[in-house]
Length: 74
Image 1: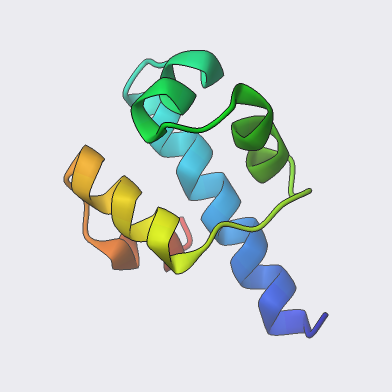
Image 2: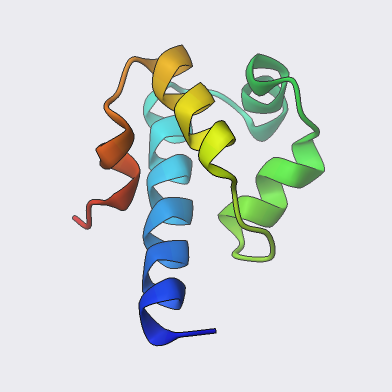
């Protein structure tokens, strides 16, 4: 994997976790909103799985954030 891909993978995963925590949702509750498994959420947050653009757009819509939110570093 290219270095920039690793960087964005980490950034996206961290921002998804931050979004979930800011919404005060457990991984289970977050997964229910996204219609996916808690295991998927855990794998994403722990850098074991990447999210699709479709999932980023779904997250953006559900949590009313701009898709670019997921690509921005703190």
